[in-house]
Length: 470
Image 1 (cartoon, rainbow, N blue to C red):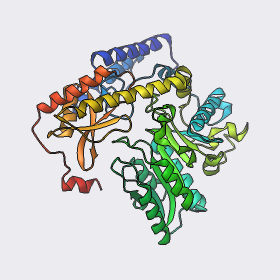
Image 2 (image 1 turned 135 degrees about the horizontal axis):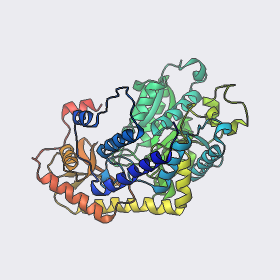
Image 3 (image 1 turned 180 degrees about the vertical axis):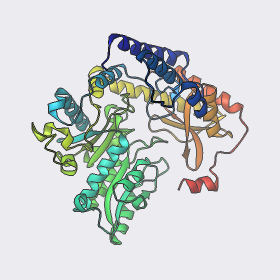
Image 4 (image 1 turned 120 degrees about the vertical axis):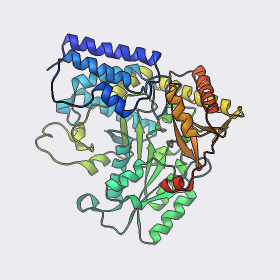
């Protein structure tokens, strides 16, 4: 059944109503799973229904779904809605273009290659290459596979048969690093967590000592994972110093820039990734700070052809025409995948480098304003001086997790909590360029008002919680 005019009209009416709802009810009421299951009739019965009834049901589901696009959402490492990228994403779904061959993708393949070239040039790769992957976790995993194959000869064909293959990463890294190690045959227990400094960045001196000691004991260092923008604090590892270690000890260096890679487009913050042009590979998510709808993640490699060398498989039923360079399926980590490049290409055409520079700079302004408000308020405690657009704080003597929960229940804001230096903290993420200074004032005032209604409690983690976080 193809789209008809009535269905298209009803669909875009849902879009319009959803946008209105973001203004009228920016934080949806908190509802239990049982309530949603019952009210929305979510169970599949196998009985078909007319399209207009299905669309009406779809609207009820969307109206009950937490909004990530409103100016009250500070909960994840993405927020808001970029008009240009959203339009392109809708068109991509309608076209449903496969992205494995030029024969089936045509100009969409060229657009994907143009996005990769542009991003690689921003990293500083003179002859860079890369692939789109469905999220930063899989981009990081792809980098780990490449590093494993580089360090352990023959591992692509016969598996990891060395005594002990090791991954090195900051203790503040994203959980996808350990998860990937368990998926690619390296092993979760073979991830070595390097101590971080007081700002949350990996200590390069400790990294070097660990690698030298492990190699001396017969282990095989596979990859160093540096983080550009940690999930909670927004901390940046010292990439230049880590690249020095990688070059000296001949270990693959990857930068997980899923969150913070976009500072490459911001003159004011680009120094946070100094030395990134020296590393072997980089993950960069456009669906985070660049506002592109989920997902649009890219793994970039310093050397051209690396992904094809590590992921290519022959398939005569698929790769029948054109140069291998025009058939991304020969380099990607999957066959069938959706078009995640068109929305980035469209948005970049609209904003340009200068527009992204202003956008990211504005979000840094919001973070600095929040920092100043918190630092000047006796009822609040700033956890650390933010490097990026993450701001962590406590309401003095009040439970951070309960503050966040109550903000949601009262429909004031969607905010999450994290752990910094063994303490539960309120984590604010400024990733929506539509938020203005007044919105930050309102958010901080809301945190204080909610905290005032809660009993006192220390945010220090208990011994059981500390043990569970290990």
